[in-house]
Image (tube, rainbow, N blue to C red; front, side, top):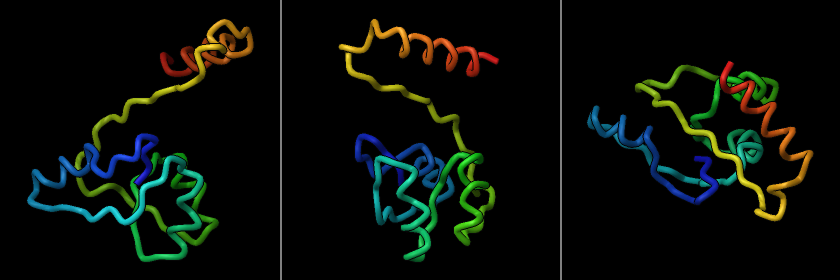
Length: 102
């Protein structure tokens, strides 16, 4: 499971519980980039965004749809408050907002 806060429970777990199911989280990472190697080394599943799943096929991984209703996952951006007035950061945030709105 990927959680930058180290949580081992998510909205997916809530959806599984509604069906009387549960999962056992074996590993929590704060970075999606750690998962391909981990998934090739242990028998495990991971729920990841579609765009990542397609990129991981060359690692020998297989992707399929999530078997429960997958709620929208909020996106968060984090930066140090010292960077609030950084022109480059402001430019990047403006581009990201445009992409998310469209």
